Image (cartoon, rainbow, N blue to C red; front, top):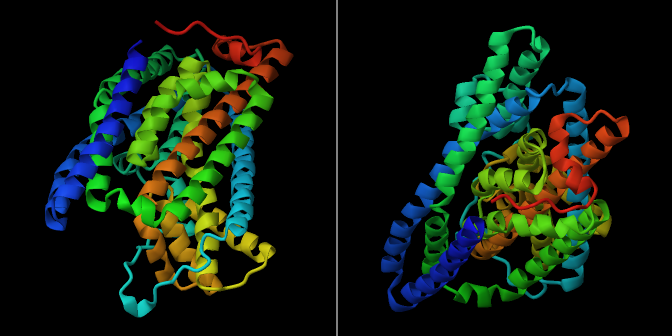
Length: 435
């Protein structure tokens, strides 16, 4: 019931934000709109800061606690390889589907592109570097990584730390107690997350109201064709992901979607994957996926599995190709998007990462960078949808990988205690809801 109440309040905050933003935008001038939006964004910033506050300790304690149950390096490596392969396959599916749909829709045909002398707004591409990503994989300081919420770096350190504890086994009672303490800390962080999420309706209201106050609902009409095309593609992608999930999970995939509706509402309202991370951990564990899988797979997913972002990059690229009248074969377009797929891993965690990738990659293929100005006005609204798509893809990926692990344990006939949480998912049997 508590979960249903929170979902209701988040939805109320979303609707109220739309209404308040539209009223303010329609009754005041641009200067006042900007001032009001600034005040509203303060509440959003508080919510997002609270979320960021818990991410680093959640990732660290979650991974170490999971490995404290005797998780060997071989098991972690197997889960990691399966996760990466799933993410790559899902990303390629998103790109190809987006490429086919965007070419068929012709959303950029007849659009007047901006020129460099028009003073188009610039998008910073300073963070666009695969080298930057690789250099951040191994942290030079765990405290620096935690202060910056560098999830991959925290994950790497947690893996080393967990392996070190696991190698001692039960031979060192002190270290055993350390593992128990860290597991307790993880449970405490989940409770802290529960407290933080009670502020979610306010953060959602402020985020939506601020955006509508600045841009108004009119931007939806101006860019309606492009926004509608991208959303139709994302809905089709979500349907395909659900169908793939059904093939592995059966009817349980629909229960999974029901349990992650809160993260989806938060994702839609704030356009922030970070804001959904703590609640995703909690809801996936309630669904039946053990902590040792969610705490490892989800951090990887936020860097490697952005299904909605991949589809948007396809739509945005083809839209600009058509607007500028540049002809590229389907194979050439696919090659351009594969470059984006690889390069986008260098800016995990960067706000508006998709638009940054597009702005940095297009000049490599002869497309003027100022064309991104056509995308900026609608990007906020599209970012809502692509973040929701990312959440759906990450939740299904986590559940499928958990099913594979549970089936493997069942076949070996030596499923450890922690695997019992996944038995219901494997057998497609519902578990009683937590009271």
